[in-house]
Image (cartoon, rainbow, N blue to C red; front, side, top):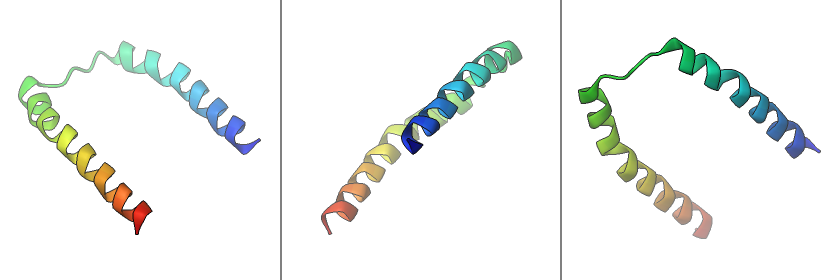
Amino acid sequence: MNLLIILGVLFIALIVIIPLIEKSGARADHPIVAKLSRWIIPVLILLAVLQLLRLVF
């Protein structure tokens, strides 16, 4: 039951937050986006490996 409540809250939050973000029109600067996107995949891979190690040991 708790899972359904959490999923419902997340779904409602998406319905509310996405239109607000689209209306704000805030755009990220290209150098900032390029700098961040270069780090996202390696950090996600590192986190996945750490979680795997935590699960195994």
